[in-house]
Amino acid sequence: MAQKEEAAAAAAAAAAAAPAAPAAPASQNGEDLEDLDDPEKLKELIELPPFEIVTGERLPVNFFKFQFRNVEYSSGRNKTFLCYVVEAQGKGGQVQASRGYLEDEHAAAHAEEAFFNTILPACDPAVRYNVTWYVSSSPCAACADRIVRTLGKTKNLRLLILVGRLFMWEEPDVQAALRRLKEAGCRLRIMKPQDFEYVWQNFVEQEEGESKAFEPWEDIQENFLYYEEKLADILK
Ligand SMILES: [Zn+2]
Image (tube, rainbow, N blue to C red):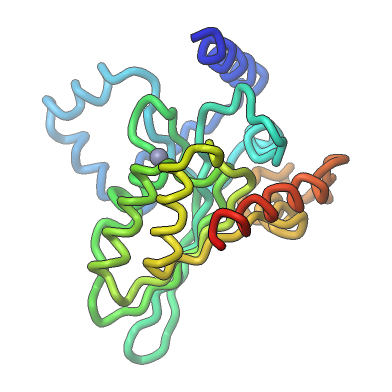
């Protein structure tokens, strides 16, 4: 598929343009580090192709500018970037929050699935979880169903997903999956210009000591309205 090759070339170009790509830690909490003690696992890690799933705290500026842009046709954007905030509220009322981002290649595990596998693999039934995702594009049907299953068996988990773009929204099975998400209690929103600004401030690498002001692109509001209308039609 020429489009795929184009996409790969664009991704390679984006990667080349950002040589300071994150040497991201394998996990937020370090659980995966013990894998490094196991020679077999280590070998596996080394032999794997370049990171299928990358996690980190802040993503490079170029990644944000390219991947999160809410263009109408997402040519060349064959990855999903998922920024998350997890707030866990225990019985005593104290809230612990963690944040970071995940990145995938669509060919491998998807970022949404990776979130449940690596960031929040288990929920303590005594804790209430409020999770917010800022995702470059909306989930595919398979990921949407994974989210629905997780919400179905984890009643103490609330999930709000803000998406920059809708992914393959013309497809009936994608539309049906988005409706199942809504029915499962997942709140789904299109990112407003302020949401992009929030991601910029909280999830994008900033120059040391100075954070640059967010520069909205020309059609950011127009594209937001475009996708918001599509989403409203789908969820009607
Ligand atoms: Zn997916």
